[in-house]
Amino acid sequence: MDSPILYSLFSGIALRPQLGKAVYLQLAEAIMVLIRQGRIPPGGRLPSSRELADIFRLNRLTITRAFQELEMQGWLESHVGRGTFVASRLPESQPMRLDKGGQERDRKREAGFEIRGADYLRHGVDPVTARLHLDDGFPDPSLAPLKELYRAYRAQLERGDLYGRFGSYGQAKGSGRFLDALARYLNLTRGLDITERNILSVRGTVMGINLVCNGLIQHGDVVVAGVPGWRRAEANFQHAGARLLGIPVDQAGIQVDALEQLCRTTRVRMVYVTPHHHYPTTVSLPMDRRLELLRLADKYGFIIFEDDYDYDFHYKHKPLLPLASADDSGLVIYCGSFSKTFSPAFRLGYLVAPENVVAHLASVRTLLDRQGDHILERAMAELLDDGTIQRSLRKAMAVYRERRDHFCDLLAAELSGMMAFDTPEGGLSVWTRIDRRIDLARLAADARKKGLYVSDGVAHRYPAYDAHAIRLGFASSTEDALEECVGVLKDVVDRF
Image 1 (cartoon, one colour):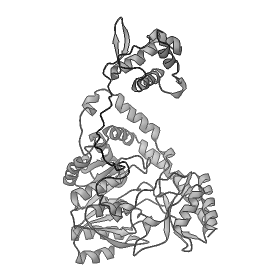
Image 2 (cartoon, helix red, strand yellow):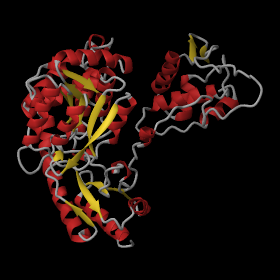
Image 3 (cartoon, rainbow, N blue to C red):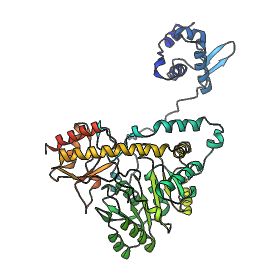
Image 4 (tube, helix red, strand yellow):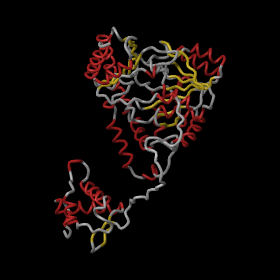
């Protein structure tokens, strides 16, 4: 090698075959770094593939592949008989910085314009990072068919005619194959009677709520929800300019009688419900109240937004079918997701509604998000069609039932004097009422110091409602971990 400087530069590159990344890519990235740093200038000649093969003790083909990779990206130029050189014009250049002079604001921390915030935006998501967790009711990803999903997703990318399937935008409402498979699945498991034209794919329940707010709720419209309820849904209603009114929730869910009294004096545009397991209290809306709710919707003409966030998890008996299965008037918008089947990080859900509503919301969706992930949707269609989802849910149900029973036994044995609860018939959490001598904020903080996450209950407190209660999720922890969680919780509670 002619230049000892170049020799020292390249001999200092450390390649690690054990990393799992192809060696030629590691070498290409290392050369790219040298070029970016200016240590090999534009037009500079690189050592030959033979010389580099000797330095790194690699096959010359590996060196050649690294050079080819950098040529395709525009970093190198190859000239027959002369060698390989750094490109005279690099693919990345440093733009000139505008210097206006004067004092600068720290623009990374604070904008130069006003941000009009609102109280309802303050109920953010608290990421669970503790080793132990009694969370909001999340699933255990280790029980999800992740390997099957990975194989199905990869298969979508490896099949022919990629342009025909993914080379241009698809339907805003979702992949046709996914919608067709999902319609069959929902008809079978939820008792619906729909086709793919009744479904809009969304990236989870929150997006579904937001689309309905954008497409069907106008400023000043009255939206009714149970108290206590889900703050994220309430924030969407308020952000849309709706007038949000609450009705009480008791041991049988929302009080439909109170809703009827409200409807007699107020024009209600939409009622938001989680009838299968009310959030956050987990209670189920009984048949008589469901039928009465449908009757009221028909009488007063309001929309029912049915958030069925954990329909698949019911332990005691065959669950009641969704309101949407008995909707004869086209007044129910049904929303579900696969977040509880896989994990909260898995963003794929759906809205079910009359065809004209779906078409309208699909148009609204293009203002926010041109379309969903059609590759993911097609992969999910395979898992729905071959029964993978159904088999996985049945297996997970058995595990979650055991964890629920074990967790409730632990709470009753160790904390019965300070915590009260009803064993939930379904869902992935226990609504736990805490002795009022225990400060929930301090409880959460002290538990966090010991490596356990529990909620501080702030999101469940309202001016007219404070049960001094929190949700304790059991599904995402093993039985051994649940024992450790309860041990930490008992230790913290005993200090009050």
